[in-house]
Image (cartoon, rainbow, N blue to C red; front, top):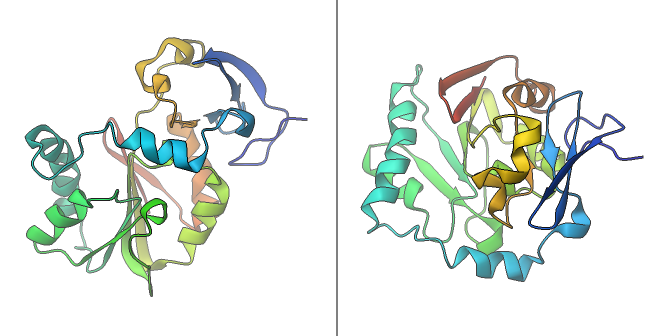
Length: 208
C-alpha cells in the first residue's frame, strides 16, 4: 500500500511519469511525489546543483530572491531571528536578508553549512520543499526550531493540475521529488503546530 510521505494517508494514486520516474498523488492532502526508488543519490544530487547559477553575482537570481526579502520586510511583527533552511552552498538569500538588517542564519546539511541553535521567529524554505527526502520528518524537526510566535515561509511552485504534472517544467528537474497543491500547505499546519496559511504571492506560502 502506497502511503503519503506528508500526511501518511493511503492509498496514493498513480499520477503518470516524468523523466522515467513514477509520480504518486495523495487525494487527502494533494501532495504529488516521486517514490524513493527513483531518487538520485545524494552525491548525484549535489553534482546536479553545480549546474545552477545561484551565485551572488547573478543579478537575475538576486531579483528572484528579492521577492522573498520584500515579503519578509513586510511581515508584522518583524522577525528578529531567521533561519534560511536549505540555503545552498553560497547562502545568497541569507546575505540579502542580513544586508536588509535581519538577523539570519544559513543552514544547508547537504553542504555541511551551519548548525541551527535555539529557536527562530521565521524559518524560510526557498525552493527547498520540492527537494526534501523526509518531508514529514523535516517539518516535524522544524517545529522544534520555531519560537512561540514562529512562522514558516515556503517558496515553491504549486502544480497546475495533477494530470499536467508529467509535462510541467518544474517536474523536469531530477532533484525535484515533491510537488504541492495549495491545500498541501494546510496539511502541514498540524505537523508544525501552526494554524493558518497565507499566500503573499503565487509561489509563496506563509504558515503561521
